[in-house]
Every structure is written in structure tokens, then in C-alpha cells.
Length: 130
Image 1 (cartoon, rainbow, N blue to C red):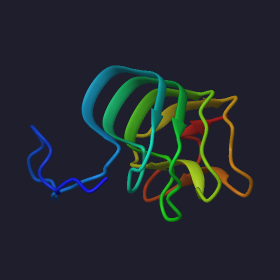
Image 2: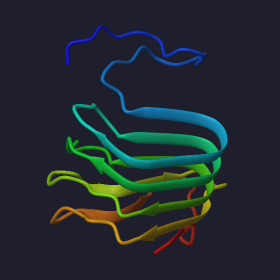
Image 3: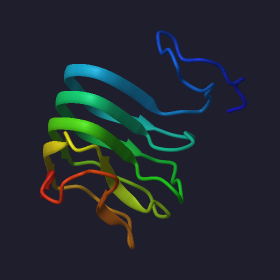
Image 4: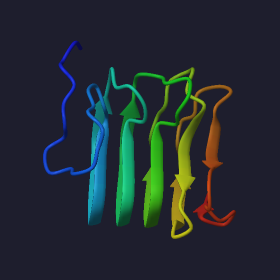
């Protein structure tokens, strides 16, 4: 839990980070299944410029009072199903980017008081289908 901050491998132009969740950019055909992540700071999963994404039965065990469990920026054709977030999380998913679309949500376990989705920036109101 007290790892030194540093630069992620193969990630130019990024700030040093530590205790980050998954950060995935420029990918097609990603599947994350039956994963539990703990003690991260910020979103458990941050995706940018991705398509054909399938996230199922994922547990973000550590709440972050400021950010959502998942952060998508310009993500298309995605599914989040059967995932859990802890109390203290503001939302399951935060979506940004005008290219974000066809994001499907089903059977997710939200903490009491949490929103399902927060749209930010240029994200279209119909980017997420629940």
C-alpha cells in the first residue's frame, strides 16, 4: 500500500502514479471478468479510446468519494454487468468524450445513494443504455 509513485510502462505523456486501478488506452476487444480490486486511489478501471469492452462480475472494493468506479472516455460497444461498488462511491460509471456510445449496463449492485451513471464533458445523453 505504500509503493513509490512512478511512470506506467509504455504510457508516454502521463503523470507519475501509484495505487492506481487499471488504466487501459487504445484497445479493441477487452474482457475483464471476476476481478476484485482494492486500495486503489481513483477509478478502479479507466478506459480511453476503447471498443468492444466486456466487464463482468468486477468488484471495486475501495470507495473513492470523488470519482466513479469506472471512468470511460471515448468508449464504444461496451458492457458492464454484475459489478459491485462499495458505499461511499458516487457512481458506478462516469462517461466522457463525444465518441462514447453503445455502453450497456445490466444487473449491477450499486451502493445505497450511488448513481448509476454520470455524464461529463461532451458525452451524449444516449451514450449509455441501461
